[in-house]
Length: 168
Image (cartoon, rainbow, N blue to C red; front, side, top):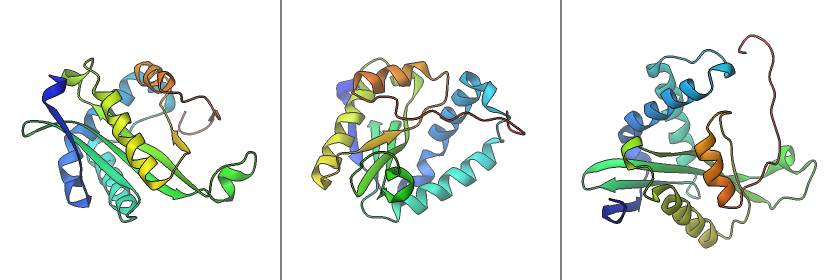
């Protein structure tokens, strides 16, 4: 199946098509990380996430990659490119511009055939084209498959966030 999947760059006009895949990830997060707090309903989740996507994609350095099997969307990756700023550079040296993989998802039926690696290859190629060497990604605790994929690709723990209070 993986060879039949085409990965293309999308844009802000493609954001509405990401809804069902985002909600698949939203439900996965709720399943693997219930300890993180009460999850919002689907409509709230999509309203907030899609607004973020539109905002991030307004920067021409940021990008979304769409993975399609025929006419069906089976995965995507949205990468935000930004200035590092003092909040990233207060403890270690970082380049002026960094990228963050805000979302990467492969649908359940398309997993296991290397599509996650192909999306990461396409991300790496675009970041190399832009001259960006620093990329970060955040994961929900319990998203073990994603963690293994990123670690196999050279990602390492950089910081850990703990929380206490109303949403735990």
